[in-house]
Length: 296
Image 1 (cartoon, one colour):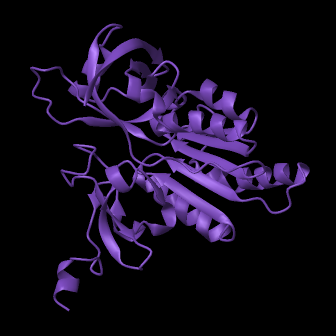
Image 2 (tube, helix red, strand yellow):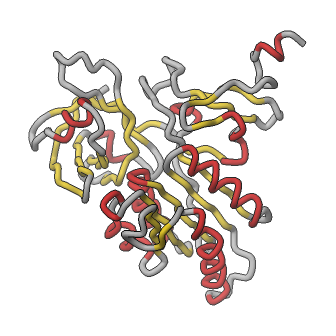
């Protein structure tokens, strides 16, 4: 853990954008996260909180986070001012797979989970990929960094809100098929007949499951779906075992896997969505070490 200095903090819609400086933070890549201790040295808040990196600058040694104030810990972070220090561990975890020139990359985000996608979209676009983003939230005010997303993908940004206050009324999955069709058409216009397709989703677990199922059902051939999972991470370094979800390995065996070390970005096809809910993950009967397996 290192003490990172607060460079700036500013409102970002209903959220806060916090920029931190420490030499190692600048090497972060899209999809990775920081484990941030909150409350200060005398606080009872002993559990770090995981935040997706919004962007990073290796030259300046900075990384930024988007904070939604939901409790005392995040409220404390939102009250930091330039010159303050914050205990940080990271960057941690796996990153998004970004395609090369001519590939298709579609980000799908829900709420402030979209924070991780604007940077990834810019990187994919800079690498020659054909990019787009679907961003959804309950209301227009809860959409995250629309300007940043548009800077990465231009007109190929599709918005949805539950109440219809911005974009299309409904869910992000309502826009998925049309967005992929449009990106495939753009690839064809660029002379790419059979592009690789990556869908990268970040948001609530129920949304990730829905995006995975719809992508698999309608675009089973040549589509890779990655998900940045939002399991609660208490330590961020694989010690506490609070962030485990069932994931199937290359050997076909399901194991309860720590998302802080194996993820947060995972191949969606390996996640046992049948055992994942918004309240946490259960242990499938056929998982390694499960009681049902042990009794066989």
